[in-house]
Length: 362
Image (cartoon, rainbow, N blue to C red; front, top):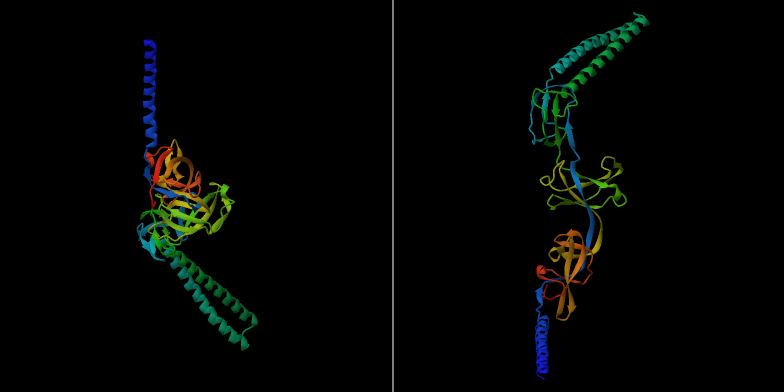
């Protein structure tokens, strides 16, 4: 009898202990407080579908200065970075040999002019004598031939002198238009020839962005597509449109050259500068969420969606696929739909299924 009572007491004690363990767990689950969070309601917004490339800024008026004659440089009148006017002298090549050639041509011209003047008078005199019957037709025709020869010689000498004077002008290198002088790799005393690069002159306006689009995009690229030009930090410099599309593929890069006019100020963009160019292919309505709403785990992107009704909501961790950035937001290609309430605050403290309380006015 004592043994039975002992066993009964042990069972009752075990049941009492088991009951004490279950009651606190149930009470803790029912009493968990909801975390206050800010939420945003997902809405569809037009999001551009784009590709980013490297663009080179080029001026429509950019000249590489090379001499048209050879000789030694005797003067450099400008420095790199100088702003020059059209026709301003940049450099001078020793012209002494050409000056001598010009003087020789002028002397020849004067000589031919003397013969021409003499035969002009002679043809007039012979004409009068022939009309008067004093000289024969043969003599008059010989005078006409001599006059024609000296006239042709004189005119040839005049053209030769003009050509040599024009050649003399080539010994002064002048700016072809208003612009900025580039690097000057030559020095006074250097011997230069037509193949020598003296400097460059760039007009830092009427700029264009040169963009090479891969051939796999050949079916999508067209005139009028929007282009956004950005610096290395992603700051927008200019918005423009494609206005030139090359009819052929550049063999080395296997890309299609497109051009877009640049309206940004010269202080922002310069000739030969390399920047980023975003070509916008189309615009599609997509879900857009703030950057703060996204968390990442193991390379996968997630958001917490507040689900529920009335006053009872839970945070459900949802996997999303992100698209391009739109300002301070991400576009979402999959995982969300319009009307979802995405949590944008305290996401680092949330776990899947945790009670949350969306704050009003978010």
